[in-house]
Image (cartoon, rainbow, N blue to C red; front, side):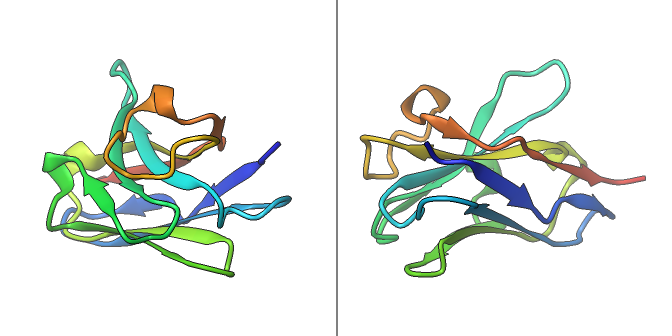
Length: 126
């Protein structure tokens, strides 16, 4: 069973940047499609960005297109989410998740993903 760990969250001013990392303490992530999701207080968890097993395809929520970039480096067992031009509405807890069976990026929805990290909090603003 994959145990995912997110890091890189924090507090930043609007317009700032953060880079989130997702890794595992056990098995490799290289065989799983990975998704980044976020949840703000009182809201449902939403897909932010997803990346296929190969890294060849990605998907972004409309709200983050052009500002966020998801990437992975095979063999490094880490998936990144670079977040630029952050806005207050980007605040929330960010989770990475791995899919057991799905290898693409198009279906960037929580039910597709099987293993979840504990999340890292991102706060944009004071």
